[in-house]
Image 1: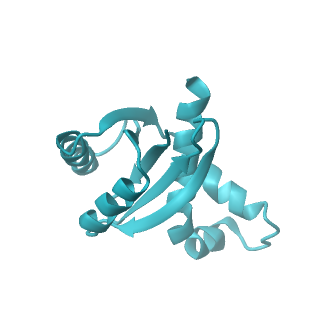
Image 2: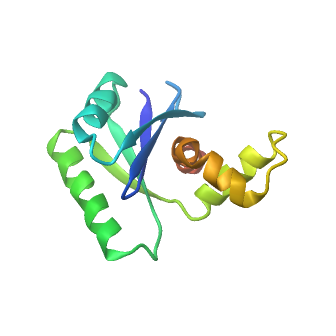
Image 3: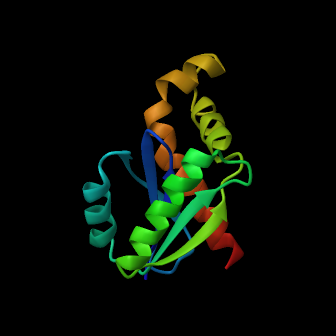
Length: 133
């Protein structure tokens, strides 16, 4: 059964999903933070049992509350929820975009790929989680 990961932010939520064997992570969709119903429908369509949420030890209080809210909602909806350290996943995602032949500066890459990075970061979160299994 597949696993899905969420990179929850105050503006956007990136998603990623695993293969059925839970070995490889793939980038999913990016949702606006106010698209909770669309996100939940997407999770349901992926037919998963486990949702992995990215976290870091130094997250601000607002983000911690947001993550805890999603955790509670997901658990109430019948999903198992686990956490995975997301330290440096956004940085890794930007580096990945820079190595795709883009000659722009890191600042321009950050601006250009800001929306694309969320699901790539979720993919890194999920791959770390799968690699630990």
